[in-house]
Length: 422
Image 1 (cartoon, rainbow, N blue to C red):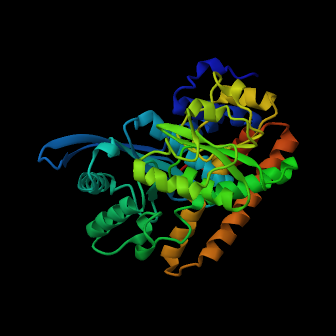
Image 2: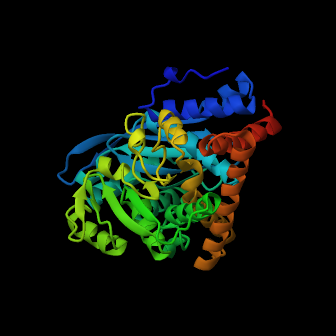
Image 3: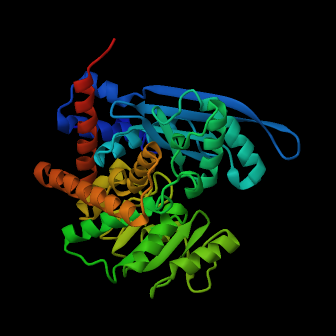
């Protein structure tokens, strides 16, 4: 029976996540009870808490921590600070984490957290006080065996250090395994900061083999120049690709002969944007998405490629470093155009994979070299790509549906095997 996609509002991330699940569930032949179990988060925590601002005033903030599934292991998922954070967005992100961990077959469930705030308008002291109070509020839910936060949009290693310290203070002893993505000096893993980007590039390398293309001299456009985007630019540039365009929330830059990502990063650190970089022409984000290039890497926010602009995309390969950058309607258009997509729950799984390595190192109190981290990451990303590609070939579906079939199928199997108790 054909799925009625008009029932879902593709401008809302959670509606997109539900539609993607329904598509996979139908292909897998899951019954209605199992589908309902997988649709709904296991646990939702909404907290409202005060923070003292630098001027002495109290401001109230709303935060979330959602555990979508704990069937295959502890919850795992980032914490984002952003004005757009709301319940629906965090529910979607938590669900995507469930499927992402299952696609790369690491023993985690999916979780996600966030606080609705504008970190660009807050001082470092205000962000620290917000982080510590938020940690105190969600402390009953998190822990190395329960739910392990990590960095996400506008949070970083320092944020994770504050969370670890606050949680450890509450426990009365140091608990490095409560978060991943923390500084190496307090138990973080080498390679974690660039893990999402490194995993993305490993996936791109396998996709190009699959398509009979060469990464060297391939032209690349990257939307988003935060952690994932800037690191992806530098890594892919080092292996011989030509980065012709990059952008951030304020706009983008283009140079047909190629940009030097490291120099662009220094410009962004100095001016707070890639715009007005001296060795490139300013462009809009819309122009970047329609760029004539070999590889397009969306590394910004959700819902960037939609049915309204998918017809304009000219890239041969889209590698989704962001979560949910392409809507289901856009998927169909891109598929019909012959554009190959490495879906988010596969392409950006390098972050959660190296987070898993960090967690393992914390539990064992035995730390790995950067070479060991990257070797293990490469093995998992490459194996996972070909696992998804095999389903694409066998089931005659595009890569997103194949990835969802793999992830949802693994969680459904674990759910059946565990049964219901009490």
